[in-house]
Every structure is written in C-alpha cells, then in structure tokens.
Image: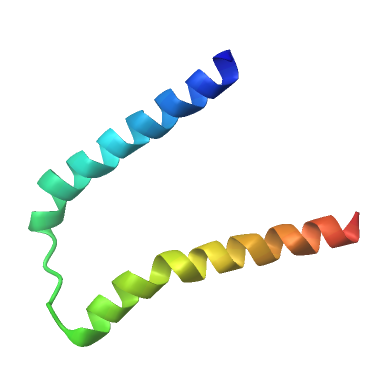
Length: 63
C-alpha cells in the first residue's frame, strides 16, 4: 500500500512542478506560433513514448 501511495505522491509532485514551469517559465520562451511548432509539440510525446517502448521491447527480447 505504501508503494502505491508513494507513486501517487511522486506523480502529484511532478505534475505540480510541470504546471509551475508551464505557468512561469514558458511565457519567457520565444516560440513562434507556426504550424510546424504545433505539430512538433503534439507529436513529440507520442514519438518519445514509441521510442521508449521500442527500446524496452528490444531489451526484453535480448534477455
């Protein structure tokens, strides 16, 4: 039970840090509002997750 609670607390704290970064640090970044930037921002989480899952699959297949 403590392990699940620890995971929830870690996710909650990471969420708080991420939201604070978005609120206070992101406006200082000069990112142009173009279609290419929007496409990169939308697709990058899925691409990162696909790479991570492929990497994990390769590691399991070698074992």
